[in-house]
Each structure stands twice: as C-alpha cells, then as structure tokens.
Amino acid sequence: MVEFLDNKSKKKEYKKLTLRNRRVIETMLNNYYTKSEIARKLKMNKTTIYREIERNSVDGVYNAETANKLAHERSRWEQEKRKRERLRNKTKTTLE
Image (cartoon, rainbow, N blue to C red):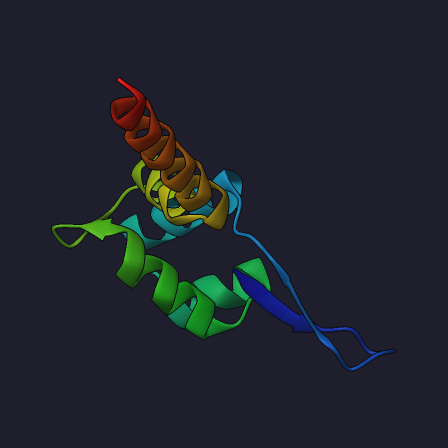
C-alpha cells in the first residue's frame, strides 16, 4: 500500500500498488536503480518500495507478476474467502 497526505484533511490515505507499478519496480531493479530512485520515480514513500520488495521477492528475486499474485493472496478479501471456504467444508463434513 502507498500512503500520502491529503493537504486539505491531513488524513493519511492509502492506495494499493498496481501491476504496472510492480513492473516499473522490476524493470528498475533489473537496471540497478536504487530503491530510493524507484520511490522517486513512482512518487511513493521509499519505505513502501522497500516493503514491497521484501514481502514479494522469491529467493531474492523480484518478479512483478509473482509479486502481484503474492500481494493478492495476502489481501483481506482473499483471507476472508479462504475462511468462508474452510467453514463451508467443515459444515458440509459435519452434515454428512
């Protein structure tokens, strides 16, 4: 997630990284840009870029498609979906 300050309300708002953002990160990493340079290019906080790379790299390699999939799997919506599926299966087993 990316955070920024709305000048009027001074309240932090968040938006998610897109696949396009992740492709920029991957390309820039492959071209040896620093994480700070990537953050400036995307107009994001450098901590966001550090976390994104840390959370979504596999064996030390960052791939945009893989990163997008991993981030989606960690999303609250997906967690709730899995929880409902487990409950449904448990109920089904109990009724049989």
